[in-house]
Figure 1 (cartoon, one colour):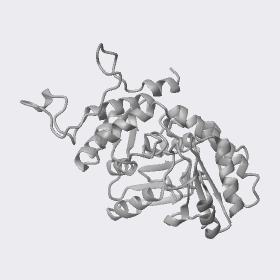
Figure 2 (cartoon, one colour):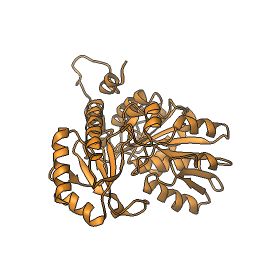
Figure 3 (tube, helix red, strand yellow):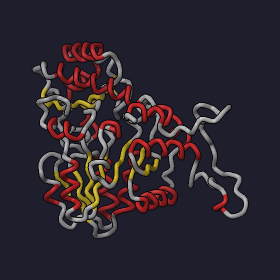
Figure 4 (tube, one colour):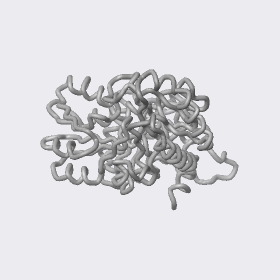
Length: 367
């Protein structure tokens, strides 16, 4: 079955006469559960929920693995770190990956004795840091700079040194890239973004093939309490069916917009893995089915970037990415990333591409 078909049918219950086509959301903190707890499939809302079960079944079908849903993308990141890393372990991660993941590593986990080593996503730096490591954390394309690393090559190098590999797959989603098929031990994503695509919920997940790792992740979720809300999960499952249609439109639009930005002399540092002249294009083409909906570029300075954003009429100034509405932000306003003050992260939506090009053109002219 093709992924486009699978994503529409993923997680649906078998047809039953008179039953709803799509199951509704289950709100439950407690369940009827007399006698031995093993006799009831559901006992308490921090342990399980039927709405989670259906969504996790859908994700598992798409990932080809065991998927566990979490309250946020960062809750999913913390679960991978928390179930694998102990005092004196070594974590290797990109110096240009998502800032909050680095913040968690350099904060709590460094404080409990985990050694954190960093190198840029691009190049061979991560490979050089693997000796004695416990976990290699990758994010590709990296957020926000959009550099790409060769997952299969790094997995091969890590396996030779008994290093586990986790991949933050948020930007491409499981439809755009399959880290587990490339050999990674963990596929992690913030489902807040492209996977659900409507900018109306916070959610994350981790997918693994090893059942023992899955049990550890489930225990972590239960004990830490990083459980997703049933309404968010129901919305996510409903949104999942349109993922391929959204992603295909977003990526087509992104390439059109990136090609337009190439013609502008006032735009520098343009990055989009789908551009044939992008430094990451060759690797991205090998391992990605879709190049993603995010473009980055640089304007002259902070004032120019802010004036550009204020002049946009369709492009909405907002953080995060992956929604059906095109958004952009001056990413340096948050700090934590080594990027110029005029750096723009543009998340391309599902509007008509010419309308977005026209809006960007008039905003650049106003700048």
